[in-house]
Length: 397
Image (tube, rainbow, N blue to C red; front, side, top):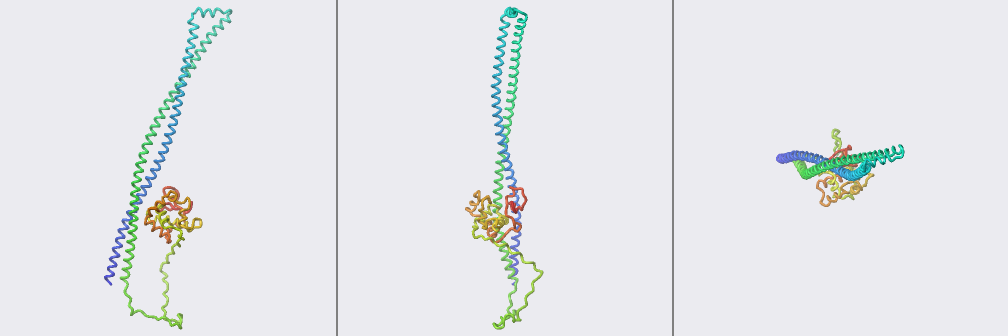
């Protein structure tokens, strides 16, 4: 018997040591997964902001191009107006020169004849005033045309400066767009690398969970063997035999029955029974496991949290009463709408997802989520709730 006890203790000690080493490596792996998830979230947020900036810069480039087109049209119109003003100024100048030549280049005698041919002083003054009026009108018209030409020339100059400024702005925006696009591409590449590492870490965690289940089973077997080895064999000579009462005596008259053992008042109360399983007759286990894999990381506790929400809905009269109908309720689960659920079903859900789905159908729940019916990805909302594995759970919208 001593050999059996020693053998059981040795096996139990070996299993416990293996479990300690396994738990240590699992803790390291869990920390690695948390770090990868945090880095992935940061990169996703950074990529989202970069895409928003790219959209904003693209809008600014379009607006600048529109302003450049408007300015180019204004420059074309000002060029035409400047040409017309110059033609009008030259025409007025030519007309004034013609009148001057007529009045002065004919000769002073002719001009004097016009003045002195007047029959009276009034006619003389009128003729002189007419000549002066014509000269003043020509000068005024020429001055106005020159001022108009100068104004148009100034506007044309300002429009050209504005056009060059818009061109510089457009070049700067296009350079920023190229830089942000390159940065977004690099961020997307880094995100793909971290997502691949995260997938590998989750696969390793799933393998470790399976190994943990195997180690736990080995521990249970070792404990059972150790307990069996430590229990002394029954000694038939020391066991009192109490024959059953005769058929005519009745069980109440049998005074040889051992007295009932009083209950141990110091013993802890038994744990409450698990919640009754929901009727899942219409549920496809593969469907249930697939939605858990689609909505949670490859982690039993994370998947059981999502399964708890689904089972809470199936047990509540406000929702469909089967798991299948809860999953396919319109507008509720994004993987159903996008087709990602069917992709997982076609390739087969992860074993951990099957484990969590089966446990939930058997009554397992995340106790802190009793009365919760909704969840969202934690990165997509700022509201308060329970964050379990990157999903934020809450009671109502």
